[in-house]
Image: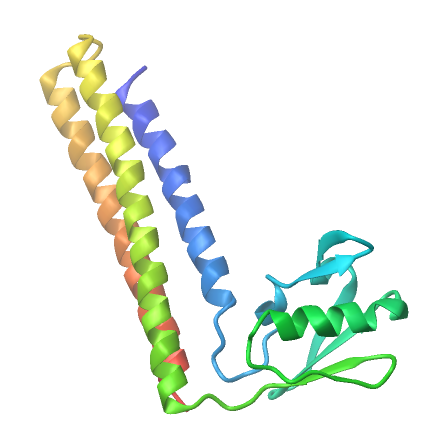
Length: 186
């Protein structure tokens, strides 16, 4: 195994952390209707927890409204119950064919809570990036110990891993800052 291989393995692991971070940010409300707000909702479908997206189409026809149209209309009640129990602050209305979810405007206090939540999620992902760095550094150190690479190669590898870590950490910071700005702008 060489330094290049360790570095090549480091990037995809850190990119996976960034992708997860983007997914988590998409689920945070910004005061606008977004289909991703309902991604984590699981519906009891004949005793099996099923993602809402697999049993209904979710649309955002207006900036402050989401609609959920189940493919099996007998599941309207179960979907409505799942949305209520998800505790997202929505008040679903059911007309027999479609569930409408008016998106209430965010209060200043709720915006601050959401911005804080973004910071917490960002910190979780920074820790994940550092864990990937730690794993890569350990691999480099064990390669030096087993005399597979020289001290210069190890030092260069450690520096390269740190550069990659810095770039991915700054991506997380930038994404978090943009999401917080989006949340706080009325």
